[in-house]
Image 1 (tube, rainbow, N blue to C red):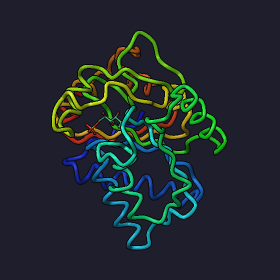
Image 2: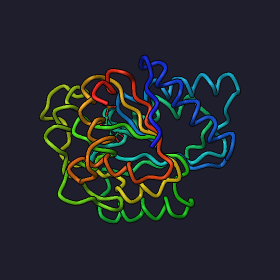
Image 3: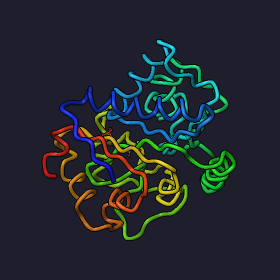
Image 4: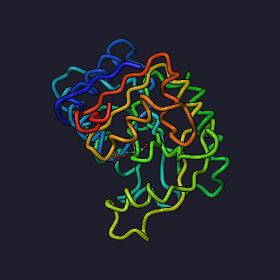
Length: 241
Ligand code: F6R
């Protein structure tokens, strides 16, 4: 695992965006795995700037998002569908039909999960997966557990995740308690992983991910086994390393 420690959030975001841009230059029809949350916002802003400067062309790119809350309609401003369109897709030239996000409002969630997994396979798998990390060590919504869940699945969100994500909602009670998440095996099959982390609140999770033992209680620790993983960590998140 390559570790890059940056002085600040901006540098983390620029480095991450440069990796994504280079991936698209190398393979214009690549498949990107994308994350939501606060962490990648700066990276999306940089990629939008690069697109405006004609440094990167998303015309043939396909994207798969890691996760989506259950029971939120896509129009809900807290849905990851809304987040992606608002923060990224509407500002670039990716084709709408090439952007995939699990449908958390699907009637049959198990079928939605199986279908999502099939769609990823049909596109040849993920070339570059961008990840954030929860303060509890989750990646996607793969929460600390007694075993690693392999493929796209229904998740019961961890207390800590509900607490952390309540900052985006008007109250904790409004945070959905379940979600759909791409599984650990699907993430690990990505040809390249880039994990971003910033802020002291992530320091413990980063320490356990990089230096701890590989265990499902710290889902991100499995990244130690990935042959092509890069962690771009802002210095406060790296302070225990
Ligand atoms: C979101 C996702 C989550 C977040 C993580 C960190 O799609 O997969 O694993 O990356 O919860 O969230 P932030 O960046 O808001 O701290």
